[in-house]
Image (cartoon, rainbow, N blue to C red; front, side):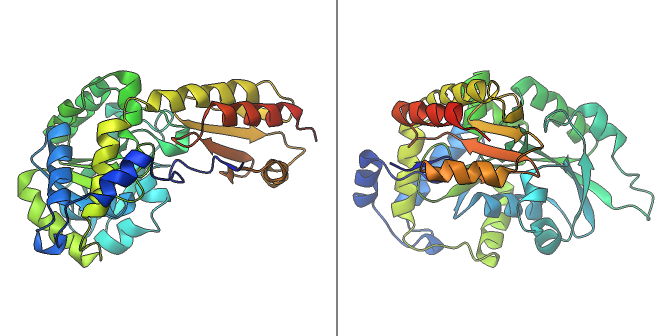
Length: 341
């Protein structure tokens, strides 16, 4: 038995999801003729209280399209210093949108109205780029799955829009946040111009993300999807899996959070771990003591058929998911307890 905790993207389709894929009605989505893709897009738009949605191959693509259609070259995006759009998307903001970034310290990845206000450039000063978009991430991958509440988002959005700024949400793991806050997904559309959600992470679909947006932005989003190479043909097989995930896998995310919490508790008690970030959702990030390296720990994990990843100079990340069950949790905890260095 291999236990893969590198990411929640490593899951395999469930039998029900397989059946949905096999039985999917398909057409050519580039021609706008795939009924399963259309159904998924309508479902996502309705779910988040917005007017339009565009199915794409990846969350990086939906983020990059979102920023591209909200900005002009030489604009500036305000975001957290560890945000995925800045740190983990290959420099796409610079290459795809020709924008710079204003990086904020935040509180475990969550930026505040006060920070944003202090970092808006003077539009009359030609020396500075034009502050254009506030980009939030929910949950925050670099900060062990921390999350915003809807009230926090509402305050940020109302302030930003009063300053003429647009709002983008990297909601790759948005449903993990919603399981904890119990906020209504449909309320999110009020506070953003574009929202990126991933179906291939905690929800367990094999491929796919969706950019949800205002209706007037949809033509631009589809044009940029084409320009970025994201036009797919009989994509309905993938869309059917994503629709199945939305219908069946949201509420079970709580199981992932509980198991992640158990891992965090055990790690906080062993001598070779220096510290563990608060475990809010399904991501566990911990630092090992200075006398050892993450590579040493990962090597010992591998000997026990457990996969994880290095996530910093002394950090390791574990992510729980659909294919990590209680038996795997028990084995992982046993391995953690028995490791010595």
